[in-house]
Length: 188
Image 1 (cartoon, one colour):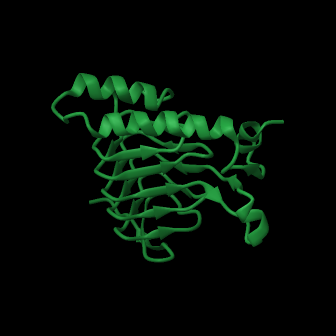
Image 2 (tube, rainbow, N blue to C red):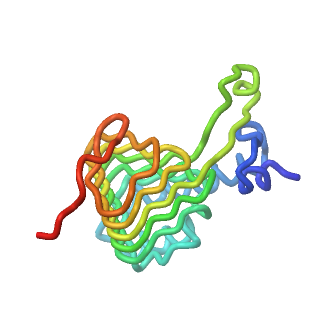
């Protein structure tokens, strides 16, 4: 077993000192730097770079503003019509899946990594990761933090500044720290 295999299986793995994972992170972070230093008006160049950063995403079907950062890129899946405003970070040690037509405000973080509470294991670089799943047509307000293992149902709205720590059902408005359902979304 390799650290990467353990990471992808959602088991404890060496996140800090494994050379293969370190090389993958450095490679994609250099690509993110290239993207973030490419003019927004140079749409073709930006989409070409996005194809390298996010190999499982149709770069022509999403809009991502800079700055933008990922840890690996290959664990990110975005539906058509999804939009990321400035300064979105995807810590994709596990899969991060957003459905179609999701709107993500500025300064949002999607964090899949969990570190041991035990200081010795944490200092030894151990980590495990849990996936994040977001349904179609979800609006995530500015400054939202989404923690490991969270699922947000289709059509929900997450208020600005929220910290999402657990499951949010479909068709609701939720906000706060920790994020809690405030009400169902009514027609009209």
